[in-house]
Length: 271
Image (cartoon, rainbow, N blue to C red):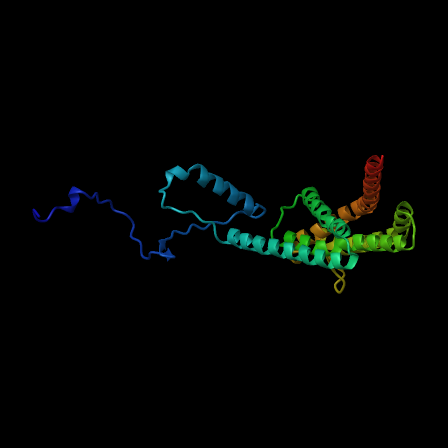
């Protein structure tokens, strides 16, 4: 109402470098900061360090500022979500097929327990070889491994059920099953492991030029996948030959204990 007022009364003018373009995503002002890491450095570890730094110094930023990690970190998160869904769907499909074929939830769960044991073997293998857990290749290796390791349990339990149908006792059926299926299970594991060892050791064999190279770029892509399958399959096979027979015997003993308690309670009621 009093007329024009000098802008210098309420604005401090500071010279700054001019901005040619203003980038916006979803109507929000966006600044993009890009960086690479040196060869041999784990990207995930550096991203976690940055996230911790930003979280610790969050009060130094304007509350309206949002910090998002994109690029390779965003791609890995999307791949992780997809692989988790694929893994759950694969386990569910296998569980449905196993229940319909064996007509037993216990047998189906016992077969799928090999997947858990194989996953533990994958983690041990990555620790032994000092390799990081790659979301894409290691995740695909675990999913592929889930379809391989269940075969050993299927062979054992199917043979065990056949012997039980013939009228054998549980202990005798378990011992005969172990004797008959030990060699097929070991042969399956050994042939698979030996076939993947060149990729695990990063060996590239050229039969035409008669040369062997180590650490070729063509082998580095498959190291984590092959390592996951080799160690997971080896670990789960050893435990399968011990855990599966023990679990089958445990079911029989639990059934005997249940019948014993039931009969004892029934006799007390009669008395």
